[in-house]
Length: 278
Ligand SMILES: Nc1ncnc2c1ncn2[C@@H]1O[C@H](COP(=O)(O)OP(=O)(O)OP(=O)(O)O)[C@@H](O)[C@H]1O
Image (cartoon, protein in one colour):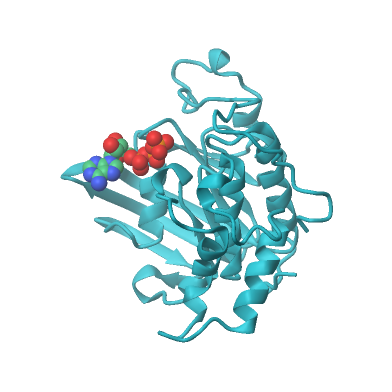
């Protein structure tokens, strides 16, 4: 069983895991984010949505300190980004398509999530091994440590990347497009894992193109349009509107709503065995 430091069963309005105020980011000389503000209460599940190129990944990278912020401020767990040091509290799951997974086993990938807990050059501890095993069990990949990542389906790779983030025992999970290129069964498996984690008090920010099976779990959606916040509120406003019915001027225009996306690489049964993912 994974342990999380401070269980927080309900979202609270008094504390926030992420606070972004008036953030502007420029990349390659071009403005990418303009005056973006958002606040994520502790224990909540927030979707960050928007069309291709709207700035979702850049916003995530800005709040993780990976790209410079030109104006505005970012706080994590109430601490300004420049003074924040507790990076092991944040489990980042990058876009699967942005990674090279060749020559890595599942065990190596998930164990790399423990690096923040290890002293330089120290050997892996019993707790490291326990947390890796627990994280793999949680995502339904128990016993797959020796498998090459490239031998897994897209959905299983995604779940291994989630296990990597969980092995770090995070308080906030930041996931960039965890449903992209993942078959419907694995989308539901990811949703099941996330449901349990949030029920235990974990906070999660999820970059999404489509809501899919995560829709009923989300507390709020923030939609970016051309680098600006165009919607910050109820998910229901995003959820039930097929794209052809979205008004030309709606901030939701350009989002896609895929019910059953197909994974062209899918060769495996990606369902998490009941009881194996909790
Ligand atoms: N390093 C960079 N230099 C210059 N421009 C960049 C850089 N990285 C991203 N951009 C531009 O910033 C804009 C936002 O990109 P970003 O990847 O944040 O969008 P996104 O909403 O995550 O898109 P997607 O859904 O396609 O992943 C795009 O126009 C992109 O071309």
